Each structure stands twice: as C-alpha cells, then as structure tokens.
Image (cartoon, helix red, strand yellow):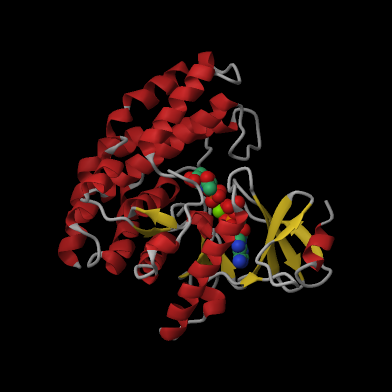
Length: 356
Ligand code: ADP
Ligand code: GN1
Ligand code: MG
C-alpha cells in the first residue's frame, strides 16, 4: 500500500513510519510536519462517515470551549486535517485514512507511569468529561453499539464458548469458569442506567492511560486522544477503564502474574484528580460505584480478550501466540485483587469526597 500517495491526498510527500502502541487502528507518524496518519479499522468501526462526523463535532465543541477558557486548541484537542477535496477521511484500496496534527512536546505513558501521571490523568479525563457535559448526546452516533454493555459481552463470551471456533476451549476451562462465576455483577451499571439511577453522559469509553497525551515538560494532561468511541455512556466506564491499566503494577499482557496487583495508592491519586474536577457533577450512586467500576471494566476487558482468544484472535491486534489469553489471565488476576480490596477502595473515595 502506497502511504505516500495516501498522504499526498492531504498535504505533501514525506517520511512515514509506524507509531504508537494502539490495539485497533494502524498509526503512522509523518515527518516533517508532523502529522499522525491513521488507517481506521473499518472491521471494527463499520461506518467511517458517522465516526468522523462524531470526531469533527466533538473536537469542534472542545475547540470552542478551550478557546473560551484561554487554552490552546491546537494542543488541547485533536485537529482533523481535511483532504484536498474537503473530506474528513480518504478512501484508498478499500481502506479509510485520516490525518491529525501531531501534538508536539507531549508524551504517552504505558507501564512507565508515575503517581503524578495518574493524578494528571484523573484531572485530564475529569476535565474532558466537564468540557463535553453540554454536548448534545443525541448528536452522537453509536460507533460501536453496546460497547460497554457488559451483560451482552458475557453473552458474546457464551457464544464463543459454544462455537469454540479456534478449538481452544479445552485449554481455557479455568478462565471460562472464573469469567462466568463473576457474571452476577456484570449488569450493575446497565441496570442502574435503565432504572435512571445512573445518568447517560457523553463519555470517551476508552480511557486507557495511553489515550491521553501529557506535556513532556510539566507532565500535565494536555490532550485526550483516540476519540473513536466517544459515545453516550456512563462516567463509570471512563473512571474504571483508566484504572484497569493505570493502577496495575504490571503491563496489560504481563505473564508473570506475581508482578500484577491493583495498587491502592495509584487508585487514590487518580480518584483524587478525577474527583477534584467532577465531584460536584456526579450523583451519589455514581460516586458510590467508582471503586466497583474499576473491577467491572477490568472484568469486561478480560472477557473481551478471552472471547477474542476463543474466536481465533480476530478483534485485538496480537503480537505473539496466546497474546489474548495472556491478557485475559492478567485482567482476571486484577479482578480478584480489586474484589479483595473493594472495601478499602470505598473508604478511600469517601475520604476524598469529605476533603474536597
Ligand atoms: P488506537 O485506536 O489504535 O489505540 P490511537 O489514536 O490511540 O490509536 O493512537 C495510537 C498512539 O499514537 C497513541 O497512543 C499516541 O501515542 C499516538 N498519537 C495518536 N494521535 C496523536 C497526536 N495527534 N499527536 C501525537 N501522538 C499521537
Ligand atoms: C482497545 O484502541 P485502544 O488500543 O486504545 C479497545 C479498548 C480496550 C483496549 C484494551 C475500540 O483500545 O476497548 O479496552 O484496547 N478499543 C476498542 O487494551 O475496542
Ligand atoms: Mg489508543
């Protein structure tokens, strides 16, 4: 595939190299310039028109708010570069490409995260939530339907078990048993939404720690990226999902599970940053469920990895054999650990709220 040709549709000839550690899209850095060229994963995001419309609308809203508060919109939100004929993505050989401005002077963190990074991530995702609080939810397309509908994720796992497409079921009996034994808490948030106890808000839905850019000099959260999944959702999805990786003492695919724990101090510092921004807008039920959300989102991601493993690795990018199984085991270790610490985590949130 000629990426120089693709880039030429947006701007000029340049050096193009693979970039970042995402599991979904193909990301390239283009120099000089610099730009981020991405091949949108249309197996996952089936409607690129709607997806890009969401991103244009959301970034336009963020840009206005950032300008109004005296910030720098070129740094604090993504800038979509249009094609020469004014489209927000370019179709080539059956693939869809988009181009963003590269946000200079920033870094992403993966396992090298510090406590300060987590505090700043809490503030960054909290601010993102606030900036989009008045964005009209009904203007957003659902880019992946039922993305965080955990009970439906359990159903998808059950289907994968039944079909056993890759013939791997026998080797994952223990993981399957654990996954199904947890299903009783899977509906807590979806039930809460249905009952009207948990409000539907504009949420990011993929707040992992490498989806936020930090200022390389000050470490402050500069820009929330990877906006493909900005959709109607629960704030609990965003809070819990950062902690899934952010508060783990190991990488998401660490196989030595003796190195993988859920760190309470990291939870506390992230919750502090997040609640400093959002405590006045969240309702009592949302606040009560914050610690639980870390367990729920970790569980949900674990069963998604396990489902993909059973289906023959068709969704998440893998870089080695059994990668999805390693990831699932890792997430389940964390789920067990969060469950043991849940009471302490509840006390931490109470203390933070009392002191804000
Ligand atoms: P994926 O959906 O595959 O996770 P992302 O949009 O998260 O793709 O991009 C992958 C990585 O590329 C990010 O983690 C980040 O390091 C880098 N990145 C993405 N957009 C930008 C940008 N505008 N400026 C600088 N770096 C970026
Ligand atoms: C994917 O795109 P990326 O790598 O930021 C996935 C998330 C998972 C995550 C697990 C659209 O995130 O839902 O939690 O991997 N994104 C999508 O690491 O499925
Ligand atoms: Mg990403």
